[in-house]
Image (cartoon, rainbow, N blue to C red):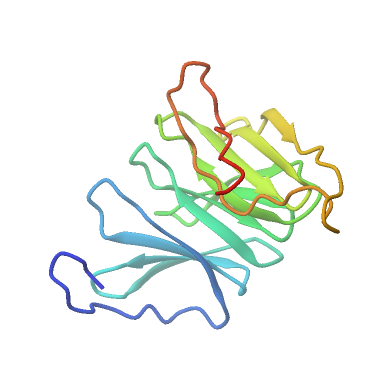
Length: 178
């Protein structure tokens, strides 16, 4: 649905299995990307419903996708193969594979400040901050929560990059009721 005009516009029907994540390109573009259990990222024209390209390389479900915040054609994707991949959406080329998580990557997010930083959250209970060009993980935040109510630790399912902040805080703790 387009909220301004109201009418339903397109059904994007490339995925053969579950769609697990979607993200608008932004920057006034009508492109979106989607990640699925087909182990691939689809890039779409949201107006026409046409699949523009398919980004393949993950070996497990693509659980999270995000366009870069700098207006470029880069997309990052997080997968059950424990990796984050950085893609050129125009050429379809995988630019970088970010390795370091030891379990499914459930959430990825580009920095909002136009830098090359990406955050990823994983079932390994860690949030990693990456440099998208070098592939290096600059910071890792590990959850050390104790077992409570039969659950051990915390699995991060959604990330939002908040910047700038007084401490360049990449993460802001949400109230426990959120």
